[in-house]
Structures are given as structure tokens and as C-alpha cells.
Amino acid sequence: MISKPKTKEQLIYFLVSTIKLGTYDKRFLSNLETMHLVNKKPLTTNQASLLDKITSRYKKQIEKLEIHVDELLNLPWDNIPIPSLPQFTEVHLLLVDDELILRSPYKKDFVSEFKNLEINPIWNREDRFWRMPANSYTLKVTKASIEKHYTKINYCDNINSMLDSTYAYDAKIWNPTFCYINTNFYVVATSNTLQQAIKHLSFEIDIALLPRLKRFGINIDQSVIDEYLNKFSQAEIDFAINDIVEFNYRDEKLVDYLLQIKPDLIILNESFKIGYLHKAKSLIENKITCVIRNKDTQILSDINQYEFPVLITGKAATANYALKYAYGTSKVIHIVNNDPVTIQ
Image (cartoon, rainbow, N blue to C red; front, side):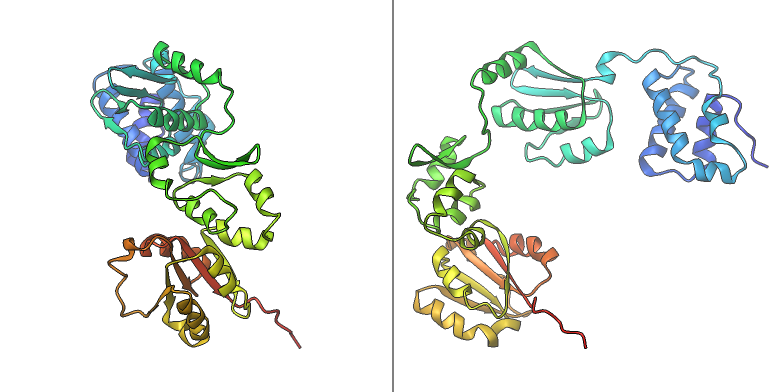
């Protein structure tokens, strides 16, 4: 017979010893056992609230033991929880010397997302905060992430001053974007490094320009699309700017679309060799390198020498992003058979 807990402190032990807990919940409750039950320290109100949430989460398991969850939630404390300090219940972002220091209440979704950001934040386990190099990009990414997951955020005076200076510009575009403004094309919200990388490109109405800008992570503004529609169709523009595209195996426009975007390498899966050899011939005549790849062929080791490689495959659409990065290509064309089926 399982003994029913009579206090919230006993509830912690009951959950750890009796209920099959998830990894994060078990770790949290085990820490409570060590830090607060063994050392006789009261919990904070924030920790007490999380204990109630965990208890409710395992309602089915608990009630199979003929114990009502509501009874457990209403159990008294031997040691009344103390109020949680704001530094542990609210987000605090500080600028300290040349680093950003972030303290935030634990949220599984936030931690999973934040630790995988390109800014490579480092978790200080002993003092329980994140640290990152202080620069404008890191601040922008960190601000966007914490504002997505938290409502109460405190910035230090230095960061508030920097943010106030940006609000004065009332900027609408913060990520690199290709725009058409006053009869001219511009890449806005750019950087010196990006400008150097794209300086060889000519900003004219050439549909081959769009996928090359996309490869550098530059968004294409609707103002550009509207201007391009004076010369190209929406289908041609969509083909140019999308990294993953589908094409019906019967559609003879594929070669024309490829010639428009001017790839310098096309990797063609073995399964499409017979049906596309005549297309490959047209491409080769236009000085485009074509490679037939089968399962025994290694991924090209020198693919980085090509400016705009394209992969044509029959793989499922869900696998195409993995293929794109595995091959190091700029675009994946997924050949499909979407002919209607007649059921008799």
C-alpha cells in the first residue's frame, strides 16, 4: 500500500520515488530534495508553483494509485515558501565589459532554442547565467529570442540607451533585404562583410541575380518582385527565389528556367538519367557542367569551386532541405509526377 503524502515536502519525495517522471522534471525534483529537504531550506514561491504544475502533469499516473491530484495540490507546507526575488522570476540582460550576461527563469522551449542559436551562448552552471560576446548582432538575436518567450524583461541602462538610439530611426527592415527604391535596387540592412561578398553582382533586372542574393541570406522584398513582374512571370520568379522547388516530370520548361538562373553545375540523380539526358545535352551546350550521380558516387569534394550548383532529384520533398545542405547546393529541384489519376 502506497502511503499518501501529508505535506508538500512529502509530496516531493512521493513524486521522485513513485511516479515515472520525465528527465527535466526528475532533475528538478531531485534538486529540491537535496537543496531544500535535506538542508531544511524553504522553497521559493516560483519553485512551489512549478511543483504544482509538475504534480498536475502526472495526474493519470497519480490517480491510478487512487490518489486525487486536487488533494495533493492543497497539501500544507511544513516550511512556507519564501517570495521569489525578481532576479529569478524576470529576465535580466546586462552589458558587462565586452560580454552580454543573460539571467532568465527556466523554460524548456527557450533553453532548447537559445543554446542552438548562431551566437553560441555559453552557460555558466555555477552562477546560472548565459554569457555571449557583446556586439550588435548578438544583442539583436538575444533580444528577439527572449521577447519571444518572456513578457517581463529588464535591460541594463547601457542596453536601454543603445535600444533607444535605434528606435529613433523607426527602421522597418533589420535583416539584409534586396529592395527597389526610387527606381534603384539596393541591399539594405547589410554589413561591410556582406557588401564585400556581393560586390561582384550587378544590380540589374536579371532573374539570375535573385537566387544568388538568396544564397547569401538576403531576403527579396515585394518591391523587387513587383518590378520584376514587368519582365518575368510569377512562376519564373518563384522558381528563382525558392531554395526548394517542385517540377512535373512532363514540364518542358525546366531547361528554360534553369538557363535563366545560370547555374554552373547541375547534379542529376541516376534515376533521372534516361529521362533527362536530352535536357542535360541542352545545358552542356550552354557551358553548364552536368554530373550524373548514383548511390556509389561520392559527393563532389570540389563543389565549393562552383558559384551556383543545383541538384535535381526525385527524393521526397521532406528530405530536400537535408539534401540541399548535404550536397552544398544552392537549389534543389524535386521532380514529381502530379498527373491526375483516373479511377474507373
